[in-house]
Amino acid sequence: MADPEPFDDLPPEERPTPESTTLSPIRPVPTLAEVTRLVRPTTLAAEQVLPVLPALVDLVPDGLRRGSSLGISGPGARSLTMALMARATSVGSWATVVGDPDLGMVAAAEAGVALERLAVVAPPEPTAWGDVVAALVGSIDLVVVAPHHRVGAATVRRLMARARERGSVLIRIGDGPWPERFDLTLAVVDTSWEGHGDGNGRLQLRRVEVLATGRRASFRESRVVMMLPSPDGSPAPLKQSDSG
Image (cartoon, rainbow, N blue to C red; front, side):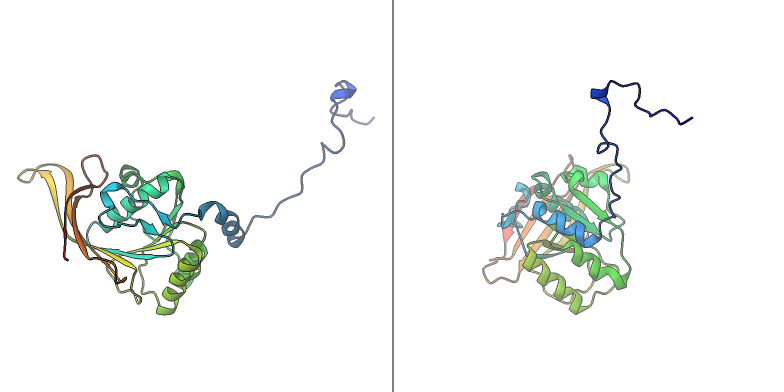
């Protein structure tokens, strides 16, 4: 005797039709290129500048211009980078950090980064590094890289050209050599911690001095002293002096 149909006990009007019981076709896993193509329309908005926190306006008066490149170096470079990502991610932009295993999620959140719009990518093999970063540039608004190997000049030119074409902001963290000039360079030139006593106590804030230089003729070199972080984890300005 044949087994009863699984829906025989339902009234005729509630029984599923043959179309509703047909299995859905198996969908293949999308490739990296397909994913970036799907993400691009939502990540690259029409605005030409990504906003920054008020505390950083003296360093980046015009905001983070799409298509530009930034080099951030010195002690506290990672904290400064997270502060730069904070405002943009909080208003809808996406960011990714490639190859920085020391990035702290708690510190990023305290700096104001929207973690739900932050993708962290493990360090790629040196031979694949350029292709991985190129796939992200043009798909993500802010692409932060921390290479632990010497990156070739051809790869750097390709990435910077792609950023200009697609409207991403490319940020490099580190003190090592970089074969091309950045549109904006931020160097932490002095730093000191406050809050501890004579060998005891809890560190509460860090005072840093940041030197900002740009390759555009209209850019005016400046030095900004700020708390990075301040007691609540966010940056806070102290004073500014221009080199004139």
